[in-house]
Length: 384
Image 1 (cartoon, rainbow, N blue to C red):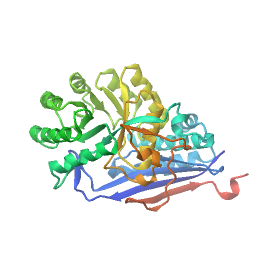
Image 2: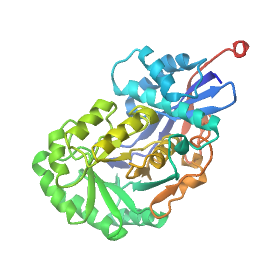
Image 3: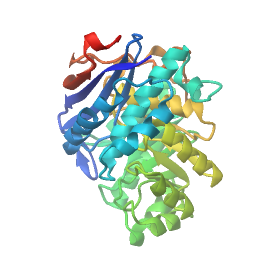
């Protein structure tokens, strides 16, 4: 089996700008996508994490560097192929390189699992196909009321979620704690509630926030401080488990988080940290520190499916982010991934990721997929 064609695509969706977090207002969503095709008629899909304004950098890295290097290679041993090709890539040692490599790794694993006729969670070593998930939402919304926020979280409970996450940090302590109080009242005492501060707290005020959150049984706080303040996060982690760091992209960064005691849950994005291959090593390191993992996801169905498969495969996974605002291309998810039962998703036995390669054009639910570049082996050379 040989790789004969690579499509680099971009998902783009315009948003109305009324939803925001403490650091960013959502006017659009962009995501780099990848489709790798083989001469056996088996294709794999991947997706890379990206900063929105810099999405073209990831697309160009995939199209200019990775796509030509992949042609002609056998895709069925993803870890070995990526390890062989990665040193050949001109590197800036940045998140762009890591994100592009992650998309490649995900797509190669998708092909390998499809070729073996097994779901990706099983190809990665999983046994049950079951993973805990949490509903991620609770953004700030222009014109939104506390009643609207409460109804949002009641809806997640009705869908079967036992754990949820909301944003804090954009308002005063009193105003945001009132938001937390309303959400806790909406979901009841038994469901797990996390908060995401989007790096907005300080060492000086973190204790007051943690004490106030504890009164409403908040179980963990994501990104309380700037991502480089490991000592500050370690101090908070003694009071309230810290979840970090979704923007980290190297194994050394995750090692520093663990070694410094800065996290109660190690958070990483499969589309940024190096794909399934690197995420498996990162998860193993977390286990050695007695810290559980939680894959992060706020993008399209491709990365959501990848995160769910990884969560189902790794017994050290605490829970997987299941985004309810960034649920782009969700119609592409197989039925099993759309159903939450008692806080868990039970993946089926369909081969690979279970998400078909997207076609350029408008997407069900909004947004469109655009072709960025296609690189392929000429037809006359494919069999000779």
